[in-house]
Structure formats: structure tokens, C-alpha cells
Image (cartoon, one colour):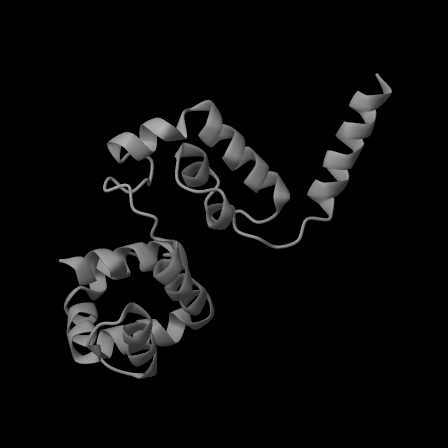
Length: 151
């Protein structure tokens, strides 16, 4: 019984003192990662991983559901770099994307290894898709940006 109380106390302390970390960053794809996307701390990460495991992340990967890549690719590297950049430069990127050029377009083009004039044109033409509303977050912008570039 003491172990249960101790474990509960430790989990509670961890939740209260959790360091900022996005649940989508370390939990992979799956319904749990989608449900707790944008949340910070160890609590949402544990919940996301538990939910992914409970509701079979394997099915998501196999059939391309719940944010999992239907091609089965591990796409963390470039997407994570673009996401990290956009988390700190969203406003400037929005202005540059509307104009079709600028420093953020140049930087992202370098990260994605694409021509900056092509990226600028695509972001300008698809601005309404990339920035669907005023409350869009860096995760959504990153995902839409990669969709636009693939098209």
C-alpha cells in the first residue's frame, strides 16, 4: 500500500514540476499524440504514450491513421527542424509567406532542401491553406507546409 502512495506522490510531483516539452515531440504518432497535441509537460506525454499503446499505435502506422505516416517513413528530422524554427518565428514566417519571400522562407527552404523561390511561390499561393485561421499553431503550419511542398 505504501508503494502505491509513494508512486502516486512521485507522479503528482512530476506533473507539478514538469519541464516544458511538447507531447507530440517524443510520443510518436497515434490517437494519444493527437489528443494531447500542444500540451506541455510529463503528464500529457505519459497520457499520450499510454493512449497510443492502449488504442494500438500499430494499427495507426499500418493503415496511416491518427497522424501516422501511411508510407511508414520516419519523418522526424527535417520536420522537427522546421517545427522548431517555426515555433520561434511564426509571425515573421506568416508575413514572408504572404509576400512569397523573405528570410524565413530562405531558412526553411534550406532546412527542407528546396528552391527558395519555389517555396516562396507555393507559400504565397497556399497562404490560406497553411494559415487556415488566426489561432493556427506551429505544428499545424509545419504539417500544412510539408503538404504544400509535396503537391
